[in-house]
Amino acid sequence: MKTKLTIIILILCAGIANAFAADGQYGLAVDNHIRAQKLVVEIMAANPELVGAGLHCAPPGGAKQAIIASTLNVIGKPSDPEDILHGSTTIAPSTKAPKLGIMLPLHDQSGREIGSLALQFKYQTGGDQVRLLAEATAIRDRVAQQIPNLAELFHSTQ
Image (cartoon, rainbow, N blue to C red; front, side):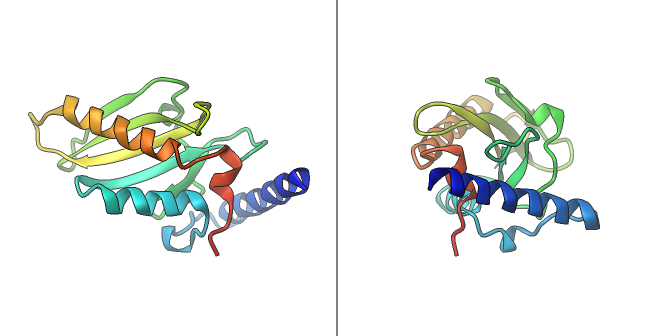
């Protein structure tokens, strides 16, 4: 049964990726009915300092990492090379808006790295980046406890 579920998930992910590639557009967050999107909505509701959030993962068995859930309408957009972390964290103040972007490795419950978590905090120049990094890490760790494995992020919420 587990093998059949994995195959179904892979077929669905491939179909979604092909649909995005065919028309050159990315998916809408509101139409993204998978567990990963539900987590992004929960993250935003629980953290009023955030102005944005997203999950970057490769589907089970897939090779390319993409945005699988977001507050932006970029579902299916391939991850930029700097968004593929492999154990590192990046902190980037925005030059265009009063926000601080923090990208952290995303883990499942077992501690396995399964992708990246992007968080954008309200931020003014000179603000406390160390405090926001600690908050981002705490958010990431709480989210990890809700992810039994990578495949769970792709399960339908409908």
